[in-house]
Image (tube, rainbow, N blue to C red):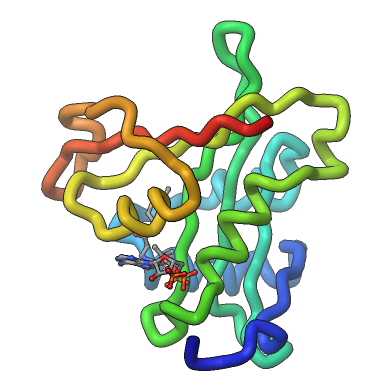
Length: 160
Ligand code: ACO
């Protein structure tokens, strides 16, 4: 590790800093998210977002997830989890993934069975997620419309 983890703080998204989150996501992901997404990030109670700050105030990473109920099952779906390239390998991604897999006041009345996400085939993030007990479950051809490869892998982790 290059820095002590005490220099990384997790914080909440607000209407004041959501613009910074948009810039971060635009930098980190090949897929872009629109105005509606960021409005939901701030206002929708099913959205779960956490920001990672380095040295007190620089936004360097974030995770956006959402509560989903499908086929009688309650899950958390990770939409985005990213860290700026210069700040990778410092344990920030780990903090964000552990946050999502932990318990949340906002969903205290829910029984969340699993956390899942899509990852582009060939993305090194597959190795990152496998460290935290996520398993490769399905392959979805033509999942991505604007990037190649278009194939996604669904990763799942059961929560207890
Ligand atoms: N290849 C192999 N192992 C990795 C990689 C990698 N590319 N990245 C991290 N790891 C391992 C680390 O070595 C570390 O293991 P260790 O504890 O044994 O040393 C562990 O995973 C945790 O690493 P962190 O430092 O916490 O991860 P980091 O802050 O670098 O973030 C992330 C990892 C989020 C994948 C980052 O590389 C990133 O933002 N990538 C670009 C965006 C992306 O692809 N995000 C995921 C797409 S899927 C989605 O968002 C739904």
